[in-house]
Image (cartoon, rainbow, N blue to C red):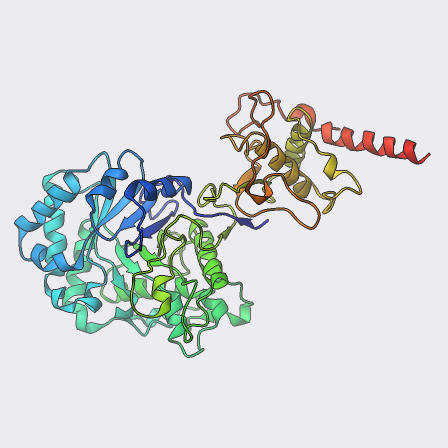
Length: 496
């Protein structure tokens, strides 16, 4: 079952051989920019546990303190020349922007500049020095194991990117890339990469199919195949990542993981940007999140996860350039979602709509017997009115355990005022922002209205419940089954 969830995040540390995570970038070119406190409240409501800042704003770092949210702070491009030419300047920057905030604020990385080679080439000669000086200051503070140092690069420095096996970095930048990769390898850091299939698609003159850019399923004969490796590529994102891996291997570096610091799709564009639409943005970001959290890596490196930061949290309406420049955000400045992501299996990430219109649904992938047991519990001890599920009633169709359980689980969730633990049911239910109502079957909580609390404090049994029999006693010939049989008998009596 496709679940619509408004933002996605597991409580994970940086791990490239373990589970991947999704983060979000926070730009500030916004009219009426929300305060740091308001922004952190939105992050927490959306279960976002990884963020990247484009600076080291003191107020924002203080607001993030004691939240556990993992933070990438940045050295702005206009400070790189100074830091790259002075160890003292770098040490002072670290003291002021890092040491002053840890450990209360969970800073895990420093991004030195952004796309420096392509946007500020005059700073390129001192870029690696800037990274080294920053790292030396972290070593002096005994923070180098906790906080990694890298610099986000544009994928435009990768030439001949398809097939990926032929890719190489623009040789103009060899004097920078070789020492940069040596630094990343020696400090166990990662290559930060900004990956934008949107731009690859737009600049391909229709060579790249839209479905290929959006992660949409492709028939085998439409998949791109690297003729040198025979690896199959079902999306542009993976092909770009593998092009970077091959480009690094061309320079004899084979063990540096990649962290995608930016990726996304604009929801609105000008007349020359017809594919910048809410639907395409929704499709790309939803599929990206699902793809990353599947922990499948890439065709070349299937065992190395690629954690990714979505660009971006807010629409930055003050950005200049094409119309799309101000429409990459997941949210407007007032906290309302630009669109609702459609996700499956993303846990609580992006699971709390800012309008508080959330629903509880059964997981279609869960064991059907467990779902049935949970349904019986909801319609029995859970005190849910399951009469709309009876034959001939508005919610009787589709007539399957997942659909019926979704109605019952949600009714219980709404009655319990969406309290923690009320949408678990031994792990067979999850929260979504997609309204599961259909036709004349209107689910409780539709229209943003909460259900009415029921008396008592018992929650739906959770996966950690010590009462292991709370479902089993209702399974064989359980409450809901008995309820249905009784209702059918009563109906027959009325007919007679």
